[in-house]
Amino acid sequence: MQNAVDRNGSYRNFMNVCALHLNGTPDYGLSYNCWELELRFVTVLHSEQIALGERLFEYIESKTTALGAEIYRQPVSEYTCSVQADSEKQRFFRDSLLCVGLSARLPNPGSYFTEPLSGVPILLTRGSDGIVRGFMNVCRHRGSAVATDCGNARSFSCPYHAWTYDLKGQLIGRPEDQSFDGMDRQSHGLTQLHVIESNGLLWVCPTPGKSEDLDAKLSGLNTELAAYDLGSFHHFDSCIIRRAMNWKLIVDTFLESYHFCVLHRDTICSIFYDNISAFDSWGDNFRLVSARRTIGELKNLDPKDWNILPHIVGIYVLFPNTVLVWQLDHVELWHIYPGENDPDHSVVRVDLYTPEPAISEKSQQYWKKNLDLVVKVVQEEDFPVGETIQTGFHSMAQTHVTFGTNEPALAHYHGSISKALAQS
Ligand code: FES
Ligand SMILES: [Fe+2]
Image (cartoon, rainbow, N blue to C red; front, side, top):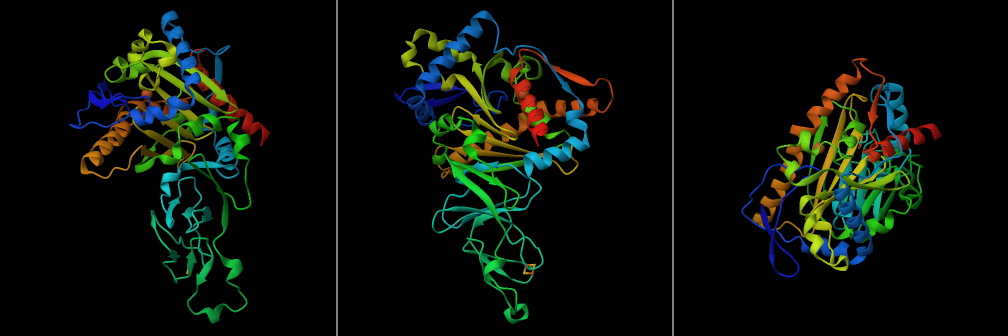
């Protein structure tokens, strides 16, 4: 257990959890204020919190959960078919906006990061004018990557022959310029990509010339995302995970609480109600809120005084491949991509964002342990099972798997995948 100061200045205990998962009872020897994080949301969408709390109590009392209308038969081929994998790559990872993180990945003018995981070499910069721009990370001379990793820069000098580009992607330097007569610099800047920075989230469309309407994509979820004030968060660190399972199986990991007291019986079972979740959707996007066992504390309060955030974990799927996890004292973003050997492999970048910058050694230790825990639990409990599922899919044991009516988020997610592919 950890102590945290609430906004009334008193101490209370909370368990440090990761994603839908909690690993034991960590003791970091330090505390962290989480009231500020709660306060941001509580003041903006309090009526939504009351409605959510009432639904969760109803589920707990009637020993049920959000239910779909019928069971969903999911073809195994969706996870194993290379033709489908190619279609997904085009539809979801080339032609559409991808969320690549919070604004905090580009904290200052001159900040940049490279993002190769979608399969396209992407470079994002924040110019001295504060504007975020996106490019193919491909030199216009002979194609080398011009930037690596992330950092702060005024320009990018290609490591091969030193062609140099500014933060707006313009070609500003070219050694032996006279050898390129007839190739004007102006039209040989880095190839631009469509980028949107909105409500603290960064989006990029990985194909030059392609774009998508973000408001239409989010189907009204923007209002709730805006309430979290995601633009004020700070990027602590990220980590990359590669597993031998289809990318959608990684997403599936987050989409039900039915497994909590089986797969996680020694970890999160004692913290969360098993199979108690509220489900809501906005177009293809959706939210799954699971109740912690502490939620009963609210029973003694007037609903107008409820703050349910310490008593839930909120999972938002920004369709199709980003999972935003609202936790007690931080936000995680899971960016999930097909791996090199798609459809049987995936690669994930997990970002941890904090409400305050991690400046002191103590806070750095705290957040590092948080991120380590996030990774440890999924790596040791969820993903090993996912890999057996991927192997089982190839065994021809069955043509379909089944999502019960108690797994509505899974049915919604895979229904949306099928619908999007059918329309493309
Ligand atoms: S490939 Fe970039 S300068 Fe030659
Ligand atoms: Fe899990």
